[in-house]
Length: 301
Image 1 (cartoon, one colour):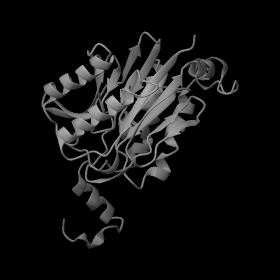
Image 2 (cartoon, rainbow, N blue to C red):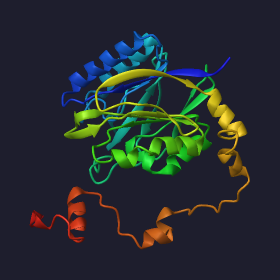
Image 3 (tube, rainbow, N blue to C red):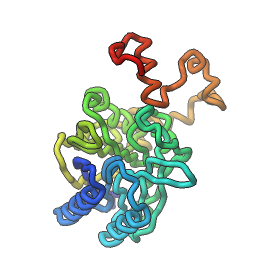
């Protein structure tokens, strides 16, 4: 018998009101659970409840009850999470029993716009034991760094998940990332974004599911949508064991090559020695681009 997983995605326009967003999540989950194919896992977008931290304990209890009542793995989307005087962009992961399996803190905040967030320092992979499937998670800007996808894969992940809030203007560049990451790692890659006028800018939506052969299984438009898609993990196993299209070994070949050890301290890489430090604040970025002749009419900052 094959290893199948029914995955449900929730793409919606994020409101400024925390409570409205919470009701949207409940509505989309209810709609998904009444469909012909019912999800065993559901995920929402980045900043699923908006830009308010909200009452974390109360919110987590609501998410836990949703997971438990429907007996699903529930990744509601990211929330603003405060811990030990640090603020994180965090993806909580709940199991079918309602227990919090883990919390992933975004490793690569989108600087300078996310300068309030502390970068996470831990990869997160969790098990679906009844399916013998491992799932790795990342958040939005993380997917621009292939090191994250590869490390999750090396930890055993067959499904790579990414909640996002992708802004208009990046679609043409970003549309290829999911299938490339899926092909690179011979895994399913799923990106779930917000859409519409979310978080003070236009988010393009286009949530996407790519399979281990680098094909797009599903791509949403720019409207609100929820959908359940059945993923066949025998395709992951076959691709990794015999090669993608029975040709490209990819992950198996990692055993054959002698990659030089990475730098112990990234800042010592020759490339980075010749590059300016990253812009960590918006004012810093504006000054930086003014030196290149952009935004020169903004006057004194």
